Length: 111
Image 1 (cartoon, rainbow, N blue to C red):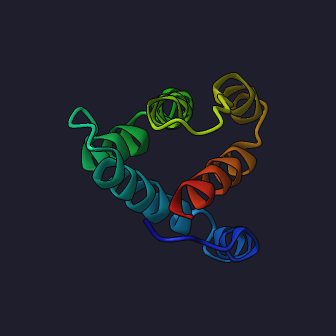
Image 2: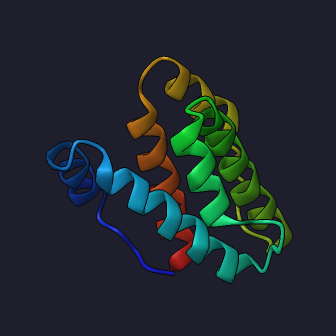
């Protein structure tokens, strides 16, 4: 799993007007799928559904956070379930902050 710099993610998201976020959504979910071995994750379908039906993004944020917490629990790591916090941030227009928090958790898993 690749560690990503949070500040660079923020800058690229702003510069590309959110296109980087779509690429990140696919890559992060795919890397997490390979790390965790969860076969029910389909990054391509999730990205497609987010593009054609934006409210799916809220589900995606919550589900990804829950999957990270599940993986942490299964592997004896400190469990930090930010699902509700990330969902509320996304609902109130701070989806980018949710994505940065998720990436922070993924960076911890990559260590």
